[in-house]
Length: 216
Length: 138
Image 1 (tube, chains in turn orange, yellow):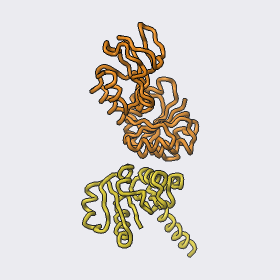
Image 2 (cartoon, chains in turn brown, green):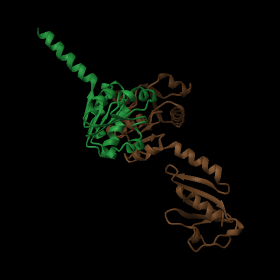
Image 3 (cartoon, one colour):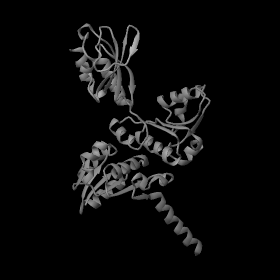
Image 4 (cartoon, chains in turn cyan, blue):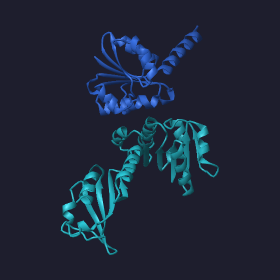
């Protein structure tokens, strides 16, 4: 894959290194040539100094043959503009943008560009670590709007029905592993102590999920 | 007319002063010291010290009721994003945007929500070109 990365800060440089080590062709753009030092000595990709939404800069980065464009500069607006240019003008198949401002990220997703919002993601992770003691997230979907939580069924929930714990659109019991064997439950399935349960939870319902399983 | 200006540099300040005698003008500027400096100089202008690229700020100043948005910040990417939000998120009838770097002029079009773009470099270049032509003909 040929990947063009805009922004050679911590994220951009590490991303560039990783992709290049995996065998992809990488070009990194940054308006400050000093930023390329972050790539270190082992980097074999190309660097281009310039503004990431400048047509000439993009063309010399090989955007016309790029399979992916990733915007991770420190400026949200620069990321937005260059991503949209990559997508609508140069028709790059995969375009991903990092947006720091969570309030803006939602609107820009409306442009049809996958957006990573690390601030919200980070806050979610930190609050989980702070408050969730008896459960942990096994996987995260989207930008953390939906989590796959894992927990072990305590004694006090033995015999309770799965259906009592499910809330349509918010909480869904996806899998129960019992004595090493996993299965997909139905609403009439009953929990047994020590069951290892995976629950799909909407981020906004995390409180409800905690209360249901741990304060019953 | 309700007019929203973003960017209180020399151009923004001048426009705000000129337009505020006849229109309802709101001016958004992110730099605090700039705002403090301008506040006494623009008594008829609603001066807001916030980042005009943030949707919540635009909503706070009532952008949905604004008839004209003029974005004249010194950063082209900011002007583009503000134009986009104004036109497509808040449906402002007319959006005017300033082009700082002429090599970005190609972006300032209706796809970004810009109805009219103003590129000072372009204007100067045109004037200079006309002068050169006139001189050559002499």
